[in-house]
Every structure is written in C-alpha cells, then in structure tokens.
Amino acid sequence: SNGLPIELVACTLNQRVCMNGSSVIRQEGWNGLNLLAMESLWGMAPDWQEDSHRVSNGLAPWRGGLAADREKGYGLRYSRRFSPVHAPPPPDPGPSPARQKALRHRIARFYSRFQVFVLMGAGVLIALAGVYLYDATRPPPQRLTQRDIDVAVERSLANAPAKPSFAAQAYGVVGPSVVRVEAIVPGRGRTGTSLGSGVVVDDTGTILTALHVVRGAAGVRVLFADGTDSEALIVMAQAENDLAVLRPAVVPDDLVPATLASSATLRVGDEVVAVGSPFGIPTSVSAGVVSGLGRSHRLPGTGETLRNLIQFDAAVNPGNSGGPLVNRDGEVVGIVVALLNPTEQDVFIGIGFAVTMETAGGLAGAPPL
Image 1 (tube, one colour):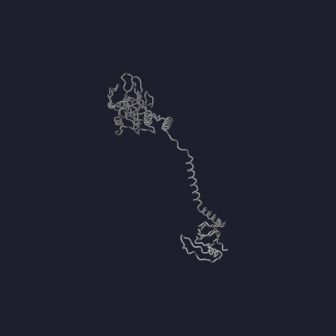
Image 2 (tube, helix red, strand yellow):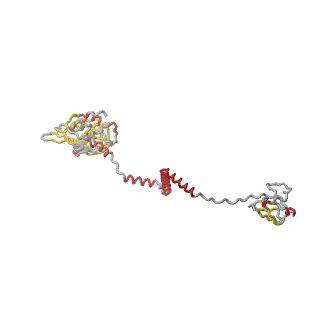
Image 3 (tube, rainbow, N blue to C red):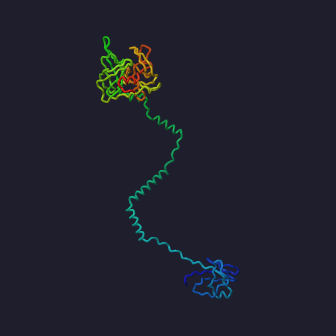
C-alpha cells in the first residue's frame, strides 16, 4: 500500500542459500514458500527478535518475519537489505519554443553586428578548402630524368636566337664613328683621287687617318656614317708614324666619337676587327686576331720605317688605311696604316699593320691612355 517492493523467494529443503535479485538469505530447515518484505511493509511490527548470531560480512539481520514462521522453526538468520529500485528519469522535453525563439534572435543579432568578420572568415575557410582540394586533386609532379633535361636543353638552344658574333658587337659600337676619306691629289696633267678611312675621336669632330691617304691633297672631303658630307682640313701630320689629323667644316648633330683604349691590354691571339672603306666601299668589316706586337714595317712609297706596330690578320685592302682597329668591345686600339705584300700588287695576303692608339692619340691631343 505504501509503494515499497516485495520480492518472492523460493527455497527448497535441500538448499542452504536462497537468491533474490539483491539479497542472499540463509535459512535452517525451511521448506516451502516464504514471503519476505521489508520491516516497514504494511506497517507491521516485528514478532520476533533477531537471531542470537552476530552480524558479519555486511549482512543485516531480518526483523520483519511472522511469528507463526518462527514457532514452526522457519527462522531466518541473516539477510541483506534490499536496494531501492529507482524509476527511469522522464524524457527530456527539449528546449521550449520561447527559448528557441530567443536563441534565433541572439544568433541574428550576432550576425548583424559581426557580418563583415563572419563573411571574411567564411571566405578564408572557402579559400583554404579550395587550396586543400587543389592539392588533393593535383597530379603528382613528373619525375625528370637526365634524358628529359638534355632534350629540353637541346630544344631551348635550337629555338633561342643566335648570339651575335664578337665582330658584330664590336662594329655596333664603333660603326657610328667611322668616316670615309676622299682626297683630291693633283698629278702630272690630271687630277687623281685617293680613298681611305678615318675615325672620329672627340666631340668636336676631330678625325684621325693615315697620312699617305691625304699627302699632297688639294682638297679633302669626309663622309660620316649618317650620310653627312663635309670638307675637311689637315690640321696636323706625323710622317714617322704615317698619321694625320683632319678637322671637318660640318659635323652631324648626333656625332658619336669612338672610345679609345690602350694597346697594352692586347695579347697575341686576341680577337680584333678592322672597319673601313676598302676600294671605296664604306663601312666594311673584317675580323681576325692579333698576330704580333711591337712590329716594324718599311713603307714602300716613302721609305719611312714605322715601329711599334700591331700585326693582325684581319683582311684590309686599299681604302682601309686610316680606319680603326678595335678590340672585341668596340674600343679603338690602333689606326690601320699598311699591309704587307711581297709582290707588286697592293692587296691583302694575310698581314696588316696598325699604329698603336698611344701614339695616334697623342697626335690628336687625346689624354694619355
């Protein structure tokens, strides 16, 4: 009537221990069915006192038995107290509609206040996800072999534009400074023309050339690289070195003087370029190497002996005299003055001579090199 549990225990005569869900009960000579209940069940008072045996092992004596059972010898010695049985907790009803509405309102307020940061965070997450997906789906890098590298290098070299030669580079530097020289030389009963070359050595238009090109000339004209044609005067001559200095009457507005360099930097075997007007053909280029230094040569026309000359094998012919001999950087290291041919023919056979720039520059008033 008060809601407390009742447990039914069945014991047989031969059993010494009876089991229920939470208790162990010892009995003596009891056969049959005994209904056990807690002391407080139905408000019954105990009809007998606890057994004289001591309580041991955490067992509590039973105090709620019936008197009739005790008179018949159905006595209980000890039993454990029953554990209370708890009812299962009620299911969680979940948040109420009012709480859900308040939660949605808070989320909306938070989003309205921090909308920019939320969008930025979402963008960052999307970008990171994209990077991750790209890395995950990207194919593995191709493993290159030495053969693949060689093939790629060969293909690149085949498709790359050819590097200009040293002669082309040198001519690109000195070409705007080279002039063609034409001298009018009177002769017996007629007037002749002597052709040669020259090089501009300063901003005023001063030109260095070979003396034998303009010796005895009644007039001299020069043709600049840009096509400007002008008369020129011989302002200085040096017979022992076969050199002359010309001063043109008109100079181009975009005049480009040559860069001068010392021949002390030259070594036998160095590459050199001769630029001039062989046989009157302007701005012709020939390349070769330095064949020797400190050479001497006797001019066949005047008998003058030229000393401390640069010997080279770049092709030069009549009309190259007075033109520049330049190194691979386009710097003028000498002035072409002669070629050697043991025959009576005045053409190139493999040996040319040039006066060093130290000697020629001193004549033109250039600073020491």
